[in-house]
Length: 141
Ligand SMILES: [Zn+2]
Image (cartoon, rainbow, N blue to C red; front, side):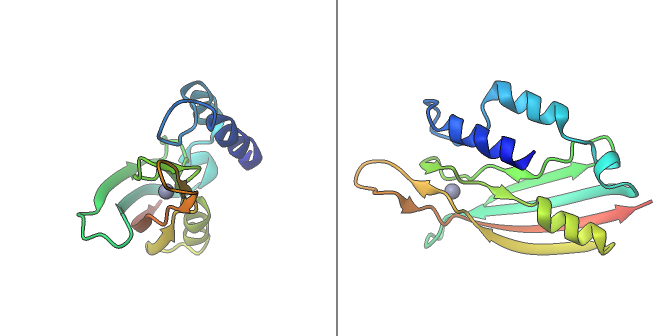
């Protein structure tokens, strides 16, 4: 499953879309085949995810993103990098959430650094290093 998603990202490279994302057609397939919260995490009633994504070395306001997921939401936790020049980046909270839920934590928080790279004039595959901070509150049945 993860291999298939990675392969799609690789194919996405050739698409003239500056934002790395699963191509629209493939995305639908991924979401169609991705289990729902109730299937993936039985007993989870609600997930409230609070994300901020910020550029490195900049005093720019971080981008905020809140997601509220119930049992019928798709259990897909890959978030796009906010750097428009970033290739093959993004953030995947799947492992973090799996761990928090396995331990029946009420909340979890963490940080991830984008592993993508920048493209553009005079930028020779410089690392992206956008940073995501997340907080999640989890409630159980
Ligand atoms: Zn990035």
